Length: 548
Image (cartoon, rainbow, N blue to C red; front, side, top):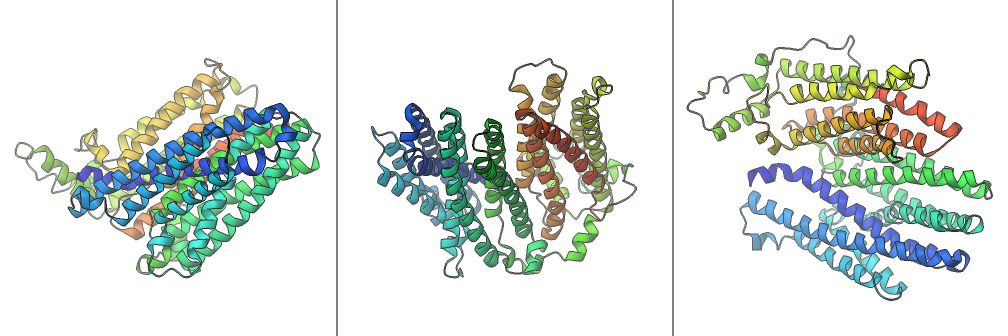
């Protein structure tokens, strides 16, 4: 049970992000059907029915997935309460948060039933979709706080609805564009969805500003607490979405007869989906953090942040000995291996990890980041040199550096874990931070091998190059949701503030590489230069990393 409690924090973020994604997809589909597909059915002609059928199928399965995810989330929350508060499972099921989750499953099932009917019932679909949004309000800060000002629930409702209409509607928009006749029908779809998106963006922005005014409250809370930094990251991603949306807006209006404009529109919309889902998971991570206004005692000053972000030069390329680290010091060294049980050994290691980190621990971590930065910067530079024909035969093997990076991080990322530490590899996965590190390593290895095979033409499938932006995007999204299990909130924040820019740069690389693959002409060439530069920038950020 203790192991489950320790991983619950990260598991709950993944569950909340998945729930928000399924919610957006279900509600966005209903809005697209009622506000775009049905009004344009006469213009779409024979394509109207296939578009509606495809949209209804996605809404149905999204609603079913939502109900299952909500039920699973309620069960995990109840289990956590049983272990943490020593309640009976029956008592845990009566907790307000658990009941809120359970109640939200009802409109999801109702929506799934309604969308599978013989004919679309617009009023019923609208009511069930609205009930879904209202039910999810129970899992937000707006409902759980006791001192909320009037209008905060309305702001949260507007924010959730706007996200669902825009981000949740984009997949249906792409389906309609792909199936609609070229010309007037495609332009009509683009114009109508553009109008819907403008309304949604207004709701997102208005709700976000209102909530930030309450939850952050002051400028020093914006930069001095994890909540504020995460809001800043969401704002940057939102600005990226707005930029792509503006390009699509002008593509629809200024070049209505240019087929290449609609091709670019579809590719930009694909990137919008990736960024939008990242925002959804960032919001899930944000909901697990206390609002910045509630952390007056644990705020970090601007001077501390500037000092931490000031690059260290030259980089630390000399590692301290493992025996000098806190995990190697007593009580671990004084414990007799022949008398200690595996549980006692694990507890001793865990106690050492939780102890105050010493100077050698900091040097060890900085060395890890700086060497990793050399790997990443080298990959970015080689990927950039791959554009030159003379160097391409050698430079195209740059993904193999990923295997070297993964091997280095496997040995050193978690110093308390086998093979250098005393904590067993399987046993260490009970720690959420270590488990997240292992997920990242798996992504690195998978990406390295597969991308090398793509670059060397060993894999020729058309979808194969898309593995790079997908894996890089997932890595960036996980890094935004990544947390460090430190008892010192201030130190945890100072580490997080260095990781957030890395996640944003990773998402930039992912988006640019996707556009390079999916577009042609000047846009593809520009994107092909942007993503290696982003990779190189990430390496330089790691080289500048410091913890003291």
